[in-house]
Length: 200
Image (cartoon, rainbow, N blue to C red; front, side, top):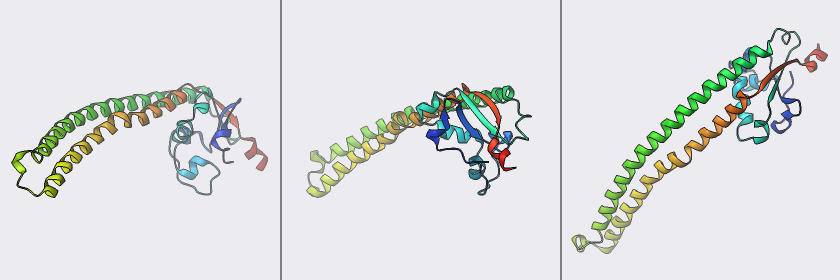
């Protein structure tokens, strides 16, 4: 079985072309086989995971609505495209539900962390203000300045992680959901891999 073309070349008018040794490898991770001509077998990942990697952040591929799976000639006739399409859609839909739960969990934990961070920021700014008041006027100027700016920096740094969780972590989850929606909208076509047939 041949390696697929580079990602930009696998999507064309015929659809997204993907080669497998066994149709079961579309859903189950095969054993790692560095000598295999199938990319999924070389990487030891399922076909679904490999396809999601191709679709991730690739708007051109996400518009494709046909998934052409090339199988060895002796295995292609027994693979029911309609059944595989339903199974692929179900897997994609279940993963979408999982990612949506992860997205909601990310927002919940992010807002909790944000609330705690705001309180800690207020505490740190309060401590920093002590070192600018008359209470610490007997301290050395360098020590006062160090504590003042030190507490301010700590407070603002504590606020960064919740902002990261709320603003940036959801982007990765949403991009995975978009790729899964693209996969869930594809119809599967099973074809015999003529390249393998010519080598037999």
